[in-house]
Amino acid sequence: MLSKTELKEVTREEAIIKLRDNQEALMNLRFQHALQQLDNPLKIKKVKKEIAQLKTILREYEMGNR
Image (cartoon, rainbow, N blue to C red; front, side):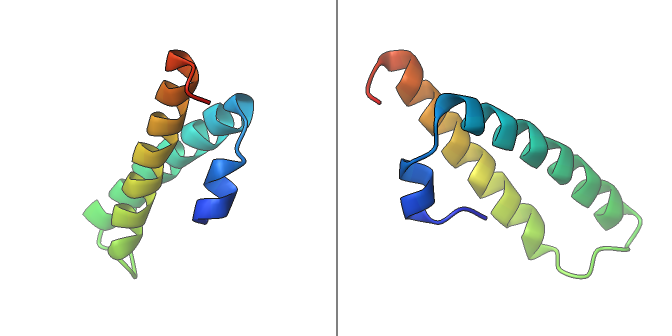
């Protein structure tokens, strides 16, 4: 999970890589949750939040705000 200061300093390329990694992690967490192998279901919420933050950063780059 990235802190707020780390999110402010993320480049476009790093955001794309982290987004892809988080999407894969979310898929794996959902499989684990379905098989009842997930110890902490709140991990899913944290990964989804970080995905949303990274998508927001990428959108800011598209609009030229970053």
